[in-house]
Each structure stands twice: as C-alpha cells, then as structure tokens.
Length: 386
Ligand SMILES: Cc1cc2nc3c(=O)[nH]c(=O)nc-3n(C[C@H](O)[C@H](O)[C@H](O)COP(=O)(O)OP(=O)(O)OC[C@H]3O[C@@H](n4cnc5c(N)ncnc54)[C@H](O)[C@@H]3O)c2cc1C
Image 1 (cartoon, helix red, strand yellow):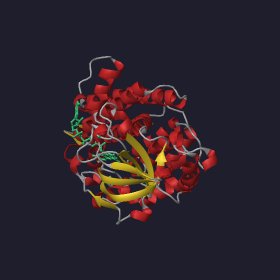
Image 2 (cartoon, helix red, strand yellow):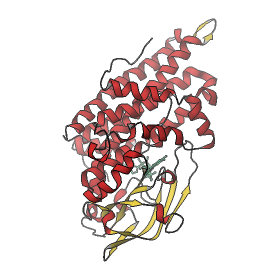
Image 3 (cartoon, rainbow, N blue to C red):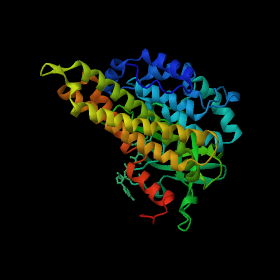
C-alpha cells in the first residue's frame, strides 16, 4: 500500500530528495552510528545538489525557496531512515544571518556556503550552567577598540568539528534590569583559531550527533563579526527559533512516517500463533493512533510554514508543530518497538537507532516543558512560572 501520498506540495523537491536518499539506505546510517561517524558523503551530496542551500537567496547562490520546501527536504531524509541532524543547522541558522547580518557578512560567506566551500553548521548557545535559561549564559564578548575579546565555554554544540563557522551567542553587558539586552550574536570563522584560542572536545552520546564542547580562550575577533546590533542577540535567536522548531517538527513527521511504515510492514509479515501479528488490534491500535497524531502534526507544520513564509507571526504554530510532531514521532517509535518485539532491539532492524534518535526531540533543541510554558504564558495568558 502506498501510504502518505496525500501531500503533493513541492512534489518535485520531495521526489528529488527522496531519490537522493535512496543512495543512502539504512545500512549507511547504521554503520556510521556504530562508530559515531559523521555522514560526510551524504552531507557533500546534499550540498552539491543544492538541497542544503534552498533557503539562501539566489543572488548568493541559493535557490531562494520557502521554509515549506526546506521542511519537506528534512522530512524526507528522516522518512528514509536517515538523520538531518548532520546538516539541518545550516538551514535554520541561516535565518539570523539573512535577516540581521550585514551585507558584508552575507556577501562574504553566503556564496561560499551555497557552493559548499564553507560550512555553517555550529550554533553555540547552551553552556554547562545555562541550558533552558539562555539569559544566564556566561561566555563574554568584551568590546575593545574595533575588536571583541571572547572568553567562555559552550556545551552540546553539535557539529562544531564539521563546521568552519559558528553562530555564537555571548554576553556583551550585565544590565540586571534588562537582561534580554545583554546578549549579542556573532558569526565567527573558527578555522584560524582552532586548537589555539578555540578548542573543541567531542562528547560521546546515545545518538550519532557529533556533539561537542567548545572552549574560547581570549579569542579576539573583528567587530564586524557581530550580527546586527549589540544587545539584540537574544531577540535575533528567538526569531530564528521559529524556523528551527518548524524544521525539527518536519523531521519528526519524517520519523513518524518511517516508524509507521516499518511497523505496518513487520506487522503484516510476522506470524505468531500461525497468523500475522497485525491481525491483533493490540498491534493495530497503537500504529493507527500514531498515524492520527502524525496527520494532525503534519497539518500544524504546514500551517506554521504558511505563516512563516508569508512573514506573519508564527510563534504559537511553530511551538505547537514541534510539540505535536515530537509527540507523534515518539508514539510511532513506541508502536514500532512494540510491534517488532525482541527484534526491535536488534541493530540490524534500525528501529532501535531511530528510537534513540527521535527521543532527542523531547529535549532538544527545546524541551517539551518549555514549549508548554510558552503556550501557557504567551498563548493562554496564564501567569509566568519562572
Ligand atoms: C544531542 C544534543 C544536541 C544539542 N545541540 C545543541 C546545539 O547545537 N547548540 C546548542 O546551543 N545547544 C544544543 N543542545 C542543548 C539543548 O538545547 C539543551 O540540552 C536544552 O535546551 C536543555 O537544556 P539543559 O540540557 O541544560 O537542561 P536544563 O536547562 O538543565 O533543564 C533540565 C530539565 O528541566 C526542565 N526545566 C528547566 N526549567 C524548567 C521550567 N521553568 N519549567 C519546566 N521545566 C523546566 C527542562 O525542560 C529539562 O527537561 C543540544 C542538546 C543535545 C542533547
């Protein structure tokens, strides 16, 4: 049965990326996962084919497509059994640079990013003592003449070892009354400083995510690395986070489809007591339930994209998309695990790998709790809890 063929938006893009993903079957991702290796070949191809630069304007070498097209690309990567985390940050980091970066930064970097000669994959916000509470970050950027002196440490900076540039959030002042105005955003070319003023240390995790810690020790950068104005970095990243939430939600939609697909196939094939396990409603219902959640989440992702692409407010829809899609993919993952029984635990079937991978989205890039607080405070008008 041909499932999920109800959506014809951006069909050419969907079919194109689907075709590319066929060259990277589950065995490709499984082998990399074993050794926590970066999918360099896949990232090179998605860059060379232009799918990774779809959000970059044409004058800088990109395709200038809307976020909806980018969401479909990431969805299809996940649906195929792959993982967009190897490169998705380039898509959502782009927003802050495009919207607030100087023309000099854009014309310097964007054409090279489009061509693939420069990698923008690292986003340094989280610190060991500041995760959810971003305003409390301690990494400082002190202005001296025409330079900024940066000191501090980031943690969980994904892909830093596979990126030339880092989008970095740092503290430029300490105004206790207006804490939102204390942070600034920088785009830094790390290459000249690696293993000197910038040190990167990998962190091994339960998924293949190229996680690292990044240390800044008296790093001196030109003032023109600053994105937009000093003290506005927090607002810039909040703005960019809508795109991030929508794109991650699209990945969860892809994961949901992957799990549902695999679960149905296995449920129909596997015979226990002389009949397919899929005949049991106890096997069918969790899969059908996950399918219902997927369809609802997918509609919300499309709605969020529509608002984002028409430059309308989309905070509520971006957050709802992320919440619903992460719940849908987790339900589908659970249903697939249960359907596969003992074989779910075998690496060979990939369900366990995808199960580990999709669990992340309950926590990062923003935890379910923080989305619920956003909805409680900002959408429903209830009192702030922190
Ligand atoms: C694999 C991975 C990749 C990541 N990639 C990046 C990256 O590239 N760049 C980057 O900057 N960061 C990255 N992160 C960090 C991620 O964004 C944070 O882990 C996340 O924001 C949570 O922060 P924390 O881990 O410090 O949790 P904490 O802030 O310590 O929170 C712990 C728990 O308490 C809950 N909690 C805290 N305060 C409240 C409250 N007021 N109400 C309700 N619940 C609350 C949180 O929701 C969470 O469940 C990554 C993390 C992981 C695991």
